[in-house]
Image 1 (cartoon, rainbow, N blue to C red):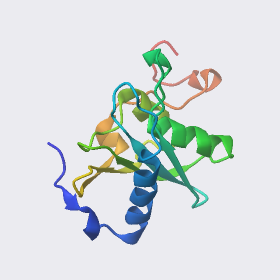
Image 2: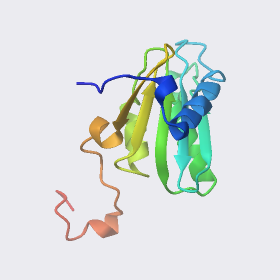
Image 3: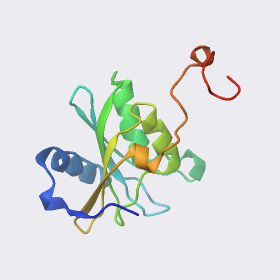
Length: 150
């Protein structure tokens, strides 16, 4: 069952700032094939905000989601912690499975704000959206764990 919607104007200032950055990024989406514009913004451990928009390609497998664009920008600047993510789409869609796993690499229980273009928002967590993410381990660290095949 999805969480109850929150009017965007009732969000606290930190979420509002993140959502505004996501909405601005959404306007820059390159979505000529699906016409499904997505904007995402994350707050990294440093406090800095990184925004991203989806970028489509004629070869659809090469399309990159807005969430991953934001993560790549943050990681390429040396960020290793993500504290929060805001995502906006017309219907209020949650991150895809691939984005969920990428986000889990940086914070397994990431707070996520999902918003639509009609002014509603929903607060959830990555753990609620991806309860059994691949663990963040190195092969050498797997020895002696309870991971099957380790």
